[in-house]
Image 1 (cartoon, helix red, strand yellow):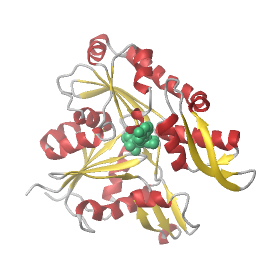
Image 2 (cartoon, protein in one colour):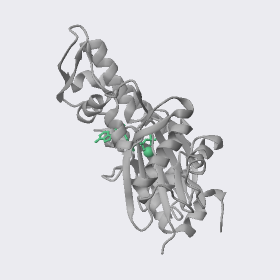
Image 3 (cartoon, helix red, strand yellow):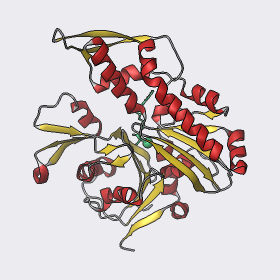
Image 4 (cartoon, protein in one colour):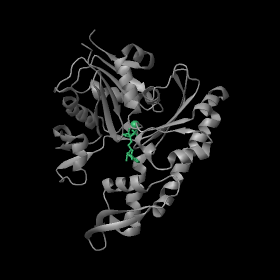
Length: 341
Ligand SMILES: Nc1ncnc2c1ncn2[C@@H]1O[C@H](COP(=O)(O)OP(=O)(O)OP(=O)(O)O)[C@@H](O)[C@H]1O
Ligand SMILES: [Mg+2]
């Protein structure tokens, strides 16, 4: 029987879990709902069901997002969340002796990377091994790119709270840069704008729906309505939003991202840059589904841009590949915990 092995992509917005021999077994919001204070605190819901409670829960239930900008903001909440999640992914409350492959942003400090392994080692799991895998490596493997042979792969992963730009060559990371904004940035901009200009308070979930319809890196002409509360009248109602109102709020960040990609390309050694020029830039992460992002990056960098319908799952697919090929995983991972045999 195959050894129990899991790949986990603890994204700021969503957690994805791969189980060896079974495939992706979980893709849920990275949210935890707790009751009680400090040492008394215990989770009552996690994942999508905790997110459902967001903006609706009574004051006795605290709904929180334990990661910010790709790193762990509240380790205790993250441990509680994972311990609760174990039953969902393994069918039992306790999981002993399993191996874990966890993706981490490449451009963060070692202490922040190590914190990801603590989610497992300081919880109730008692793992056999926890290995950290740099996210761009998992991303490339998930796209089935031959990272050992390639002399130049550029990946831009736009997630919920981060956009990570990386250049890989011959199985390693040449350079990586983590920008502190992703898809959630647009939700916040939309909420603030509608509050200020329309006197309407809308929730984060409505803002996310507006983003998916109206946010575009190049101008488009569309509109949508959202439910909210009129702050002047104090009554619930509907507000009509045009894409033309949103574009000025988001344009700068798109140019900042494409500018950062251009400057990374300019600093990339010519032998590596030439293969990137040939193959194009790979755009991943669910934030990459924002309209026109591929077109803007292609125009600004004069490179072909490859997009994917699987963009949210490329990292977890790569971790899954390593979970199925543990010998290969050793080549890319830093084993932090080694207990038992
Ligand atoms: N169809 C869509 N169009 C635009 N944005 C989308 C779409 N679907 C999801 N998103 C956005 O993608 C983001 C989530 O992407 P993803 O799951 O790749 O992030 P993550 O891995 O959780 O975060 P990070 O990598 O930053 O830690 C959210 O901001 C979400 O609103
Ligand atoms: Mg991600």
